[in-house]
Image (cartoon, rainbow, N blue to C red; front, side):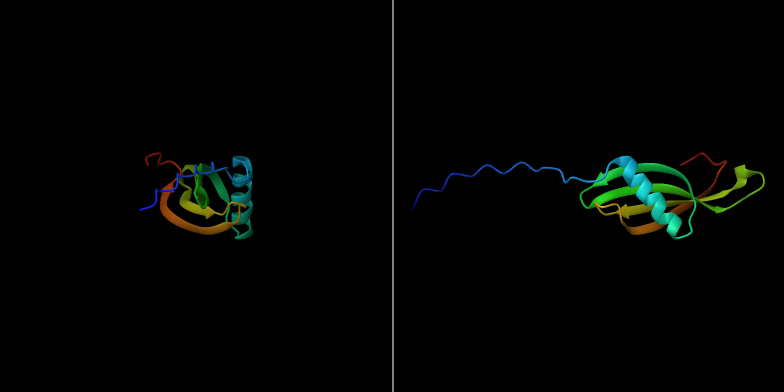
Length: 100
C-alpha cells in the first residue's frame, strides 16, 4: 500500500464580520416595534452558530399600579445580519415578580 498523504493543517476559522451587540439589540427592538410590540427590557444577548439569540420582556398589559404590569418573556432568533427569523413567548410574569 502507498503511504498516506500527510494531513494538511486546517485553516483557522475566522469570525464573520457582523453586527456588534448594541446593533443586535437595536435591530431586535426595531423589528419588534414594526410588529407593534413594545420592549420593556432586553435581558440577554448571545451570539450563536446561526446568528444571535436575544431574550426580551414585552409589555403585554398595563396594570395599576405599574408593578402589576403583565410582561411576556420572548426568545428571538436573529440571523447574522440582525433580521428576526423567529420569536416566541416562553413565559409570562408580573413586573413585581422578580423570581425566575
